[in-house]
Amino acid sequence: MSSSEAGVQIGDRTRSARWCCPGNDRHRADNVIYTGATMGFPPQYLGFSGAPTRLVIGAAHVIREYASIHRGLNDESATTIGTTFHHGFLPRRP
Image 1 (cartoon, rainbow, N blue to C red):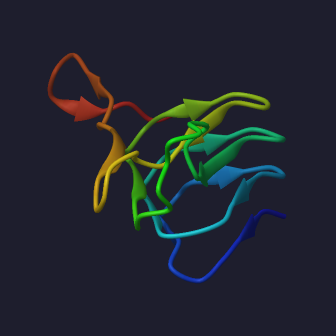
Image 2: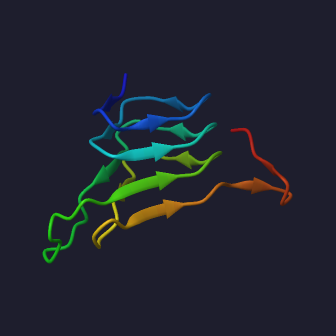
């Protein structure tokens, strides 16, 4: 079971264990998310103004145990992890 709030979009065939995603994030298809991963929290920067930001994760990624991936830093920005490609053509299936 995962924990996520309204506004989080999870793609098809994404498999996950226990993880936490608190806000306005988008995860594409075919990702594998392991136990304890935290994604979409505010940046760990004292100068962060609290501006609305987001996290966008492409397709076909493996996010391992207790990884932290934070939202963008500046107003309306995003931390973006693109889609993984196998042989440059098709997304890899985990």
